[in-house]
Length: 341
Image (cartoon, rainbow, N blue to C red):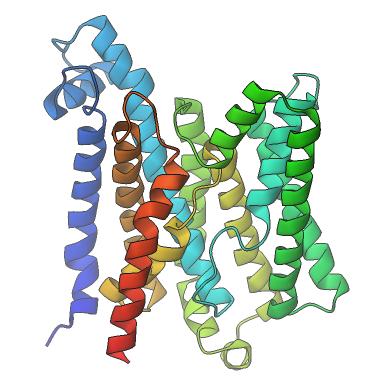
């Protein structure tokens, strides 16, 4: 008899991809402008060389330049954060691990604030580039601290906690000592997560790195399965512990860095979605990785859409919205797991 977990690749993935496309199409039509999903598809086809749509130039610009890149970037960020959560929870054998455990988000925040408030780089680099540099710097510091302390997963986590506190303190110090009221409000909104400034350039950059990360992690699915049984068991199965750990940690760090540099810190996606995906697809990473990425993409598209509309005409930071939705969902998952055990 075929089990539900074995049916997941056949049933869940195609259905999930179709639902993702429909979600993106629907999200682009929600807002003040009176357009529907069919109009969204018509506008995209026209841009790709298809027949002309019946939309006005203003409606085409709203769909193509504002809403569509935002919805696609939300899908990309959701997929990337869910992927990083899956990998880190398996690699660190910690069900509470999320993409920000290595200090990447705090480092990105410091980098972004340094650009906006202090003017570091004299305009040569933008906020996204500054955030990426800060994220990579934080990850490098975590590696140095972990190696200096003797290596190991526990020391890596402790180094990540230390780096998070350090860069959070630096960010707060810069904001309180150098920023005016307007800069402080803008920085705070970005730190809480925002996709309002999404562009096709952001989509291309994040999308390329997230797709690469998915490919690498899916190719190493057997290694991730081995890590679930512990470091000694993985070594007995022929896994190069140090090399594979560095490869997978590096992939998650760079994927998280590029996401944070484009959208700010969006919490709970990388924590909650891996657990939901395991409940649906099981623990085999060959199935789990694509399932979690599709679920993460759909989740963030709809949460971002709700964040745009819930306090209209103002906009709720998407990081706040994911926390509001994510906390109850995480409680439900924990209660279901308790009953299952």
